[in-house]
Image (cartoon, rainbow, N blue to C red; front, side, top):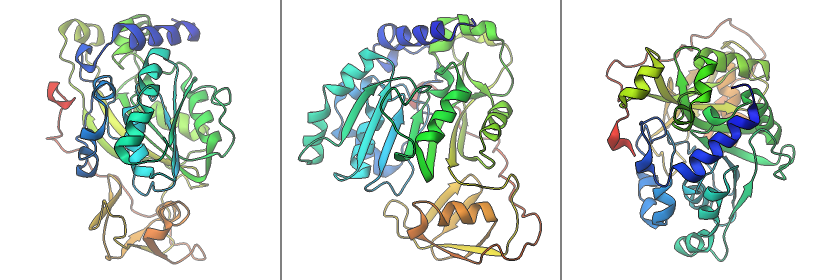
Length: 350
């Protein structure tokens, strides 16, 4: 399939008409591959049952330090994540959900007042807009207008991924953060798979090869994207598995800052100390899969990590010592190895 519009319509049909609840999914790909943290699990009982039933995410893309922020959820669907974010940003914050499926947005829209009341807000701080990730201007989003962008298992459904990420970076403020979870593959998949509505709708046919994703970001000026979490995905449908062959899939959560970072980790003799000031993380703050900051314990960091912590909304929560006046060469900042006993997402993940 070469027609991008045809792929968009296929996705709209699958998520607007074919799927009615998460129970209709045939694989565990579009399914929560990592458990929600305790502070988010506690909020789930406050959400409307219809919103929860029509959730098709593959991760938990909820960064910390969101109070008062303007957050954009790309591919918001029926609004589950938007309503969790509504509580996280607080009554003075703002959440914008964008989706291209009218049926999903209709579910999200009709429960705005319900969630405002559940959270004790005078009015809803959430708005929903019909739109395409590849053209956020048409959805009324201006340059540098949002603090944080989140997305949950939507990139794989987007036909023009380079344009989608260019748009996301355009609307982010300098120092802003793109924090998202999606399905990735260990190889390049045949384009012919994009003609299969089930493989596309189940978040598999459009999954990017991880290294091609890194190259895509590099072309857009993103020199240092960080992996926060990753979990293997189980393909439990025999017919689907036969079409995919030996390809392996993962749910990966990424963190990208809109900052002028270097393409290697460089050593400037800098030290960062987490102040333990985030209520959801009083003891440990995990920046990514290989930077775990214990509260009040100084840690040597590369120049990029120092910038991520000191030039973003995390700055009030860290003390970063040192500057870039003196350079000491490359910094040993290798990511952690993938554990052999990593959890595989199965039927119980949703």
